[in-house]
Amino acid sequence: MSGLPTYYAQQMLNLHTRFGLSENARSLLRAHDDWKLGRISQDELGRIIKTSANMRQAIIDTITKVNNIMKKKPEEQKMCLDIIQACAEMLTALEKPAEIKGFPLMKLPVEIRRMVYGWYINAKIAKRAGAVAHPRILPKAPGCHCPQFVASTPPGHQFDLALARTDKKVRDEFLEYFYQAFRFHFTCGCELTRRFLNNDSMRQNLRNVKIHWSGTKSDEAFLLLARCPKLKELEVVVSKGTSLYLSKRETEMRRYFGAPKPAGRLPDSLGMDELLLIRGIERLTVSHTPLKVAARRAEEERASLDGLLQARLKLPRTGL
Ligand SMILES: [Zn+2]
Image (tube, rainbow, N blue to C red; front, side):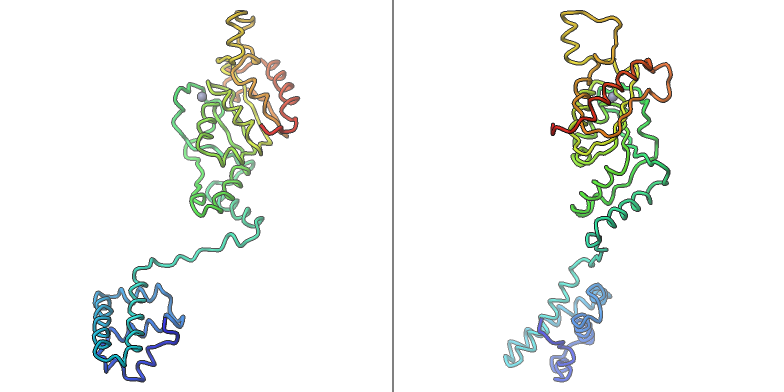
């Protein structure tokens, strides 16, 4: 940039006439000055240049013309270079995409930002008391035949997390808020393991989980929950299907001792050992399947498991 606006200085020297610049070239140089002085934005300058193909051509013609003059009249070099530079800046303005001026969210205090995240999410869903986050509808995980007693996926109820696809800092903070603000329901261990697979933010930040203890991956699922550093509230739903798969320990015992009577006890179920590794829970519930009475376990079993988990899972975290 040549420092001071040049158009009016050039006009005083009668430069435009002497150089034989076209009307288009003159109005472009005037617009360029206005941009330099902050009278118009870069977008506006770009729009003026784009008004017609003649305008673009005027810039190219001016560069060529002034370059030739400079060769013939070295004493005009300073003025010629000013005009060429102005033309080059106009071409650059034409190339640049429009400036997007966003709201400086990260300059707000963190408490306000968290309120913004809350409003953002609530604007996407109908707000209701005790809002429940339902994981996105996914086809069932391969090998999953679990009944969906815990209704994790009402149709059409998904969160729009477009905000998480913005700046990395906003994404991390927003996801932290999102995973901590809502209760997440999982239909079975298969669903939980699959959702955790590529989502470390979820594992790092989940606070409140409801899960149906079911499926061939209950052991993995509970181990993953044991590794959630911020998990504070847990509801484990049991059903008759919970004891469909045996723990590794029980499978080995049966090779030598045979099946116990009665069969299908909760302590022998796949995932029991891993469930007992979870720590640091503040609110813990063990419940029956809400709907199908036929799938329910005996209340004595639920109460026994509740007693065991209350005794273990509320112990301090050990950093698994
Ligand atoms: Zn499953």
